[in-house]
Image 1 (cartoon, helix red, strand yellow):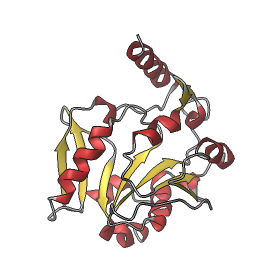
Image 2 (cartoon, rainbow, N blue to C red):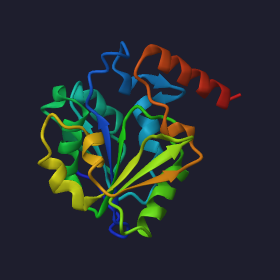
Image 3 (cartoon, rainbow, N blue to C red):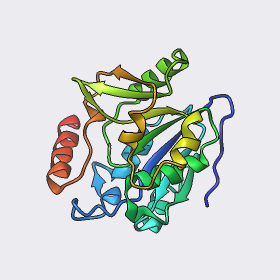
Image 4 (cartoon, rainbow, N blue to C red):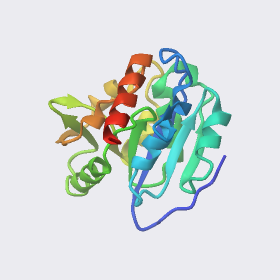
Length: 206
């Protein structure tokens, strides 16, 4: 397990889910080169500097993930032995490493999330004690990252294995936060998705 340096002044951490098989993508997508760096680094680099720690949950091909994040001092690796059970099993593993009152959750294949989206969710959460989950919304569609209060961790861990994060969140006090960020919806599941993201990167560099 790789330890990390933390900043105790900010009570917030993050979880990146990078354990999947990438079966629909045709290749191990976390390592696919998008622009000038692997896909996973795009997601990791979007996290704000004030996050104390970022837990990257591995499963399939963990050594590749560990190599990608090796130079990130705030990253802590959490290996999910049950990654074949699906994404929710990785969330349940990742939350075991959270020590702050709040934490973000985002799959590792969301390369275009704006830094401002993290900032907005955090600023809303600090002033909204009646809610425990904060979800960004773009054009009436929910996306990632999701911000959760750590008071939910125990319930998450004991949630049935056949549940999902969506089902869990439906039972919580949730606030939808409008954002000006299409990136909250843009993940990579297929070769076509990856081609679209390559095109988006190319246009941004013109």
